[in-house]
Figure 1: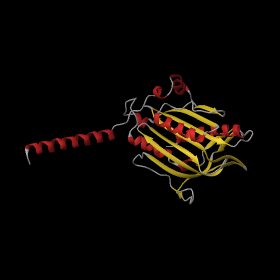
Figure 2 (figure 1 turned 90 degrees about the horizontal axis):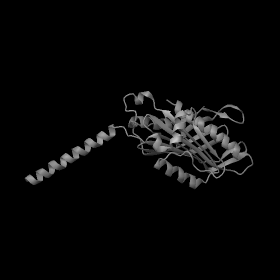
Figure 3 (figure 1 turned 90 degrees about the vertical axis):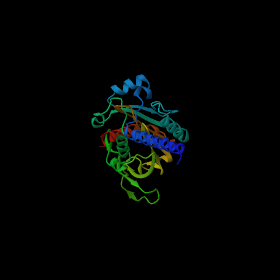
Length: 277
């Protein structure tokens, strides 16, 4: 081997080693998320920090996202979903959660989540079975009521074979699962859940693959309902956005009933996320 070839080999080997070191350094280093003020207006950020309950927006006439954070991936997904569905009811909530002390005790106050923490949050959001038995406040009954009598991951919409909740040791870029959920308001339905992840975000959408009926009344047709929930890293806090939207049947009084139901039920989902270990 000539001196020139030997020099080129040493240079190539050095570059490979350098790239490997950088790669493993990036894997071990927490990702830094945007600040809260970068994601929402300053006044809204102040309200989130002061509000004990999630901020909520209900629209039933020419709805459009109002609480949607300024996060490119999430905005694109929600806006595309909105255009394809053309809903006549939209409920949005926005809330701020302190991250667990265990995940912050060795971190800079503005440091982002680690890959392990993000994977753990992802597994919380795919734990569909833990929705069984959660409660929400029923405005019509003026009392707490069970939301999902049962909630189970299934293999596909046709066979409906029950499966355990998925659990991941490596964070996926995306994941799709199907679930069968018995809702005491809208009956027994099949849903498609689609999950996506980014450096500073986890979000999922839920779509109904069967018609949702309120008793004997057809309330929401197949593929006419979406829920979106996003968890965004904001340093020592998590910004959680949730939205429920639907194109409902034109039945007098049905819109008000569904709007009220969506508002209280989406709060129940937020509580489920906060309370799930």
